[in-house]
Image (cartoon, rainbow, N blue to C red; front, side, top):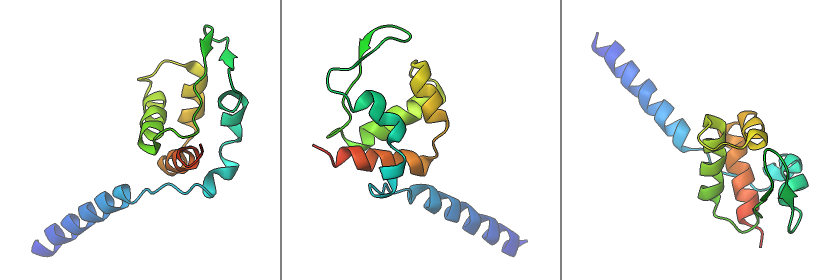
Length: 106
C-alpha cells in the first residue's frame, strides 16, 4: 500500500513538473504564426467581424500577456469568434511558442 501511495505521489509530481515545463520557442513558432499575420501583421488593420475594431499589433507584447490572451480566447473568456476558433486549435506549447515569437519582435 505504501508503494502505491508513493507511486501515485511521484506521478502527480511528474505531471506538475511537465505542466510547468512549457517554454516558448520562437524558432518553432515560425510555421505557426501564418494564421496570425493576416490580421496582426498589417499596420492599422481593422477587422469587420463581428464588428469593426482595431486589430492590435502583437510584436513586442509580453509573452505572458499573449499566452494569457490566447488561453482566454480558447476558454471563451474573450469573445472574438475568429480568435476563439484559432486559439481552440492551439496546444499550450503552440501558445507558448507564438508568444515567444511575438515578444521578441520590435
